[in-house]
Length: 190
Ligand code: 5GP
Image (cartoon, rainbow, N blue to C red):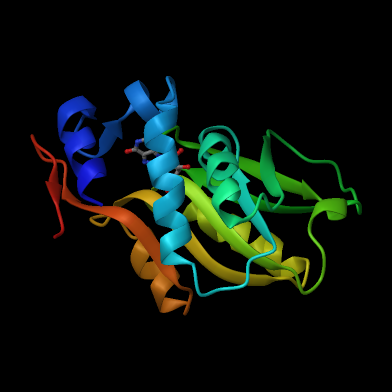
């Protein structure tokens, strides 16, 4: 997605050599006009699939998923909640995530009320790094016996393992841009 590449080059800030901050339009301040273009592009990539619901993860996935939903006919958006620790509770699906950016493990959970057997679900998130967040969402969908239609990511950091892990497991992955390296400057995979 050409406009997203330009926006990252213009507004993105590299932290260390593997974290990209895009607070100016995606992770803190939201550029709604631009999010609409992202929503349209996600729809374009999944236009041939039947999708009943979008699943994302709080917090940054919510805005992207909510805007994208409008291009899929206003389908429901469910966001997994992040919690420090979970009591055993049979009314929720949960999975563990290890965050490399924050160096902590946390649980994510979704109420059983909001994912139903056989629903066709599209996962959306802002970044893909090692794939932990997406794999936890896949785990939750599979525990609910629903179908993972695919995964759409705004910014894939292809030099980390997430994309490889997800594709190797046979899931359809559509990343709007793929970053080859963040070593001093942003380099994209064309
Ligand atoms: P993963 O679970 O794939 O290792 O990491 C994905 C999650 O970590 C995303 O939901 C995102 O919130 C966060 N993340 C990973 N890498 C980056 C990055 O370079 N920049 C930002 N802003 N968030 C990141």
